[in-house]
Length: 87
Image (cartoon, rainbow, N blue to C red; front, top):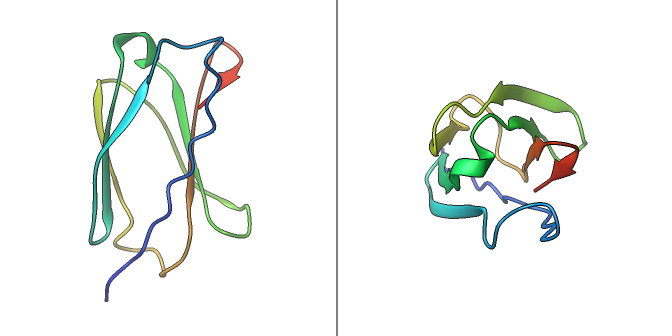
């Protein structure tokens, strides 16, 4: 089964450096992205298309993989939050 993940990143340039999040790959059921050093320590929350939170973690490194293998096909939103600001 192929999973299509739509990654929505809300950008607030006042709070973060230019392009603080870069999606490296969105293939099959995995989203791979990297963040700037200033974003390490941000909280990451993944929501399904109904707005239900399905996963949360703290970014401990600049590169992160989110695996949607166990999730049904659909649209998902990944939100990163640090110091009251959201990406």
